[in-house]
Length: 492
Image 1 (cartoon, rainbow, N blue to C red):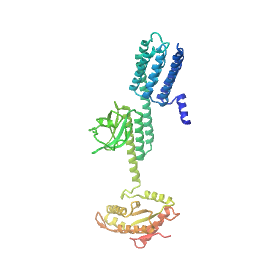
Image 2 (cartoon, helix red, strand yellow):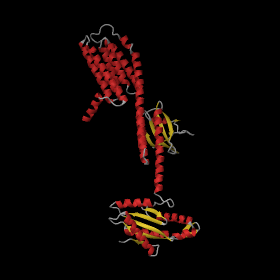
Image 3 (cartoon, helix red, strand yellow):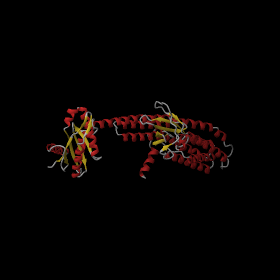
Image 4 (cartoon, rainbow, N blue to C red):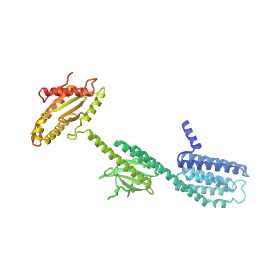
């Protein structure tokens, strides 16, 4: 409650920071000042009761304005209440033209809310209220003689002209504030893209920015879709749709032919039922998504500024996604052995260090060294040796579990990081590796056969990654010394 009271006091007494809110604040204060300056004239009525009622009605009118300012919206009930109170002032005051002292400031204040159509309706309600007040003017005690209603009604064209000028100013203010909000959203999106290489972060930031752009452009709605044989598959929507969109939009006929990335008119009136009303639609091709389109619509016309902002989001996010993909590919390349596609030494060492850093981790390392690989290179050539290494890598992948890491450390040396497997099962796995690698392999020049010596080391509490590697290496040399094509487990 205290926080709400503080915000209310700030609204009444503090100058807002935003341009539109500053204008509303100024026009509200001017309206209140006009009512205060007109108040003494109302109290000098010949009939005390009429004077008192006129003063009370003026106070109620000030409360209506305050409600509009605090709620930041012009409700139809508020407009009707203002028209009735203006009519009451006309009926109670002599001459009735005194109402113009509050009617014109009220017009200016009302003009900075809502749509132009609603502003015209508000002005018409005020005129109707004044006409009704003139009809009752002669029934108020003390009102004798002509009402001077002609003079009052003669100001009606001026009221509409004032409303038109105020709305022109308001629309310019609205457009400027909306542009500032869109620019701020795009600037924040651009800053967030600097150094962002994660694909999900790029997509999330683009989604937030599209929502901010639609919120800053009244009536603008957008939906990202992918064209497919069964319809347009919805990936994300932004703006004030009537409700959740179906997963697939049917009946959308996308533009054909080259577009150069430019928005193209789209005949999609059936989407009006999903949006807030009748819209004009455009389709913007997505530069980074095959078959991807952004469908944007707005009542009467598609706001060019909003569409331009959506295109900017598409272009920036597509560039960021390409950078992300390139970085991912480079990172993968830096961690992958180019010949076999297995993890390389750097990737294996990093995974081993991370495993050893976890006090509760249970893992083992199996070092695999091919026996007589040099003979294959010498007899059949390096092309045959490379093909042999590729086949060995394939067999290693098939022999281990999905969560185990196979790596080529260099030359004919391989290693396997085995996680969460009992020691006897690790020995069985190493035995299957030896059996798999002893099978003949077809290479350019014929069939060759090599063996494999495997050394196994189990991680023990207190050991670091280097110690486990050293123990596996010792066990592998022990397997070679024992006659090759066998497994040895390191024992302290």
